[in-house]
Length: 404
Ligand code: HEM
Image (cartoon, rainbow, N blue to C red; front, side, top):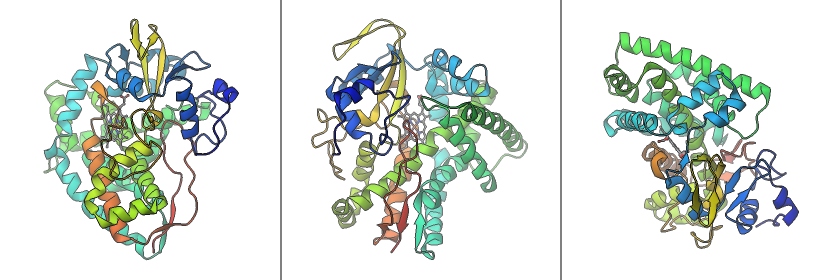
């Protein structure tokens, strides 16, 4: 581990203005913050939860709500970003959350996602063979970011040519969730929501005029709208949310996974020796470099967790990345071990909002990583990659690799 932060640095730690080096390696900070108390106050009066037991308890408790209107109104004002984020199921509580989650879980049923999984295996092979000739590639651009967008677009039956627009919109909308954003980033996020809504309205009108033969997540959602289970606006915003939820997160799973396996050679050799280890390897990547590092809740009522008494209205940040390295839960927490067992990581959250797409994300991760290392067993890093300048989502800007 690099040098631990000093006591003063820890006292002054502020997620809105993270210290130098934090984005590339937040783990010494998480470690020091947790050692100072698994639930601690931040300079803005919010609370940061870094301990595994505390994170897990907060995720599962009904006293911690996901409704973000109080938080997003001052941040976004009355704007497309505000409408979008406060209509997404993830930022809502029962009864709205229960109803829309049922709709999304129903839409992601195996029959609706099977055509996408069939397409995925084919597409992964095409992407790999298109990289072969060049002998080297930025795997974020050429591989990790392509797969999740193709998957969600296939679920929503978006034509191939339009996928770059969706990727751009998704990054702008998610970027607006960072703890501090500029006026330009807010404007870009608002424009992205407006354009994305317009795009989806036109797509849905076309699918209603000329339905496709195969089942899809979109056709399932439209059927549910026809039965009055979800309104048009709820459907549109939650389609946008599906892309956002599955895009950057899964890109990071694939990118971080390839990076870790290229870094920890002995683990990569153990995987090559027994490819069935891919299942536990994906879980370890999710734990070790969690694609989504932070979650948020607001406290309703008085509640005590791990000895800390929360007050109504407290804003809470759950640090998944720190919880997943908590030595109290994971022996040798800073070691990357592809067959770690048990591995009860919190990368997909926990409780009523547990990721609704985790089965699909795991399929994507296993397929993308297995196929890559099968195609390029000699692959090697060309340069030490840098992480994107974000703290909520942990993923690489670029991953330049010699394919061998
Ligand atoms: C490695 C990839 C992924 C990671 C790490 C991830 C992580 C998460 C986390 C931590 C949450 C909980 C948020 C909270 O409680 O505040 C969540 C929720 C969600 N995720 Fe994922 N996710 C991934 C991929 C996907 C995919 C591929 C989809 C869909 C295609 C998806 C759909 C959802 C949905 C719909 C929710 C909201 C569930 C609810 O509020 O009830 N996710 N995800």
